[in-house]
Length: 263
Image 1 (tube, rainbow, N blue to C red):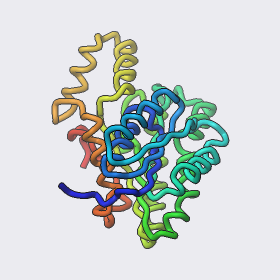
Image 2: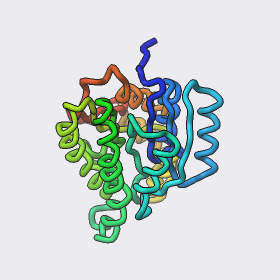
Image 3: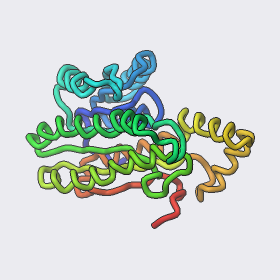
Image 4: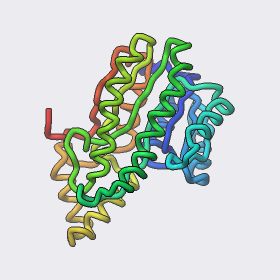
């Protein structure tokens, strides 16, 4: 087996109470990392930590943190200092905004979701980079969406705000590369999570189609012919956090079963 070389590394995984974030936290712990889970739902976070602590060589703690809260970066920094003693790996992740068209995008909505999906990610990353520079080693992986390369109909807010992270990540990567820190964007396609179920239900209601019709349409658009599994996606994230991925930076990495049509 390829040893990713991150045993005992300290990792922060945002929005890890469920879905992709929870999967990434578990994948890093399976490699022996000490992981700090973050999210809003305490019972889910506690359950995820229990699974990790019971079944992996790694270790997990959690902090209740809402990315939309004004003081969230302070909350996270305190928890990182207290529970991890610092961070080597940062996995930026956030929930998605409400569906809707460009015409639905009010200044209030733009502001609200920018402040939960973009601003805290940039602020937290900036706070952690000095620690990584000091060690001459760091991994920053930011989970975005396939929508930054092929915009997804009726997800105008997501397409717009997650695209802001594309320019940010590329700029950041060139600023920190000489310090042994990598920064990459990881783009999920249709990975089977609760969020996908919620979007499919919304899509069915909006279009008047049955859920199974919506699902069949989704699968037809994916060359692999199926939804991705969280574990498959999390394995790519874990690799991007590895020792071996030391020369891979400033990249957009797709994990989408071939669904994105562009090159």
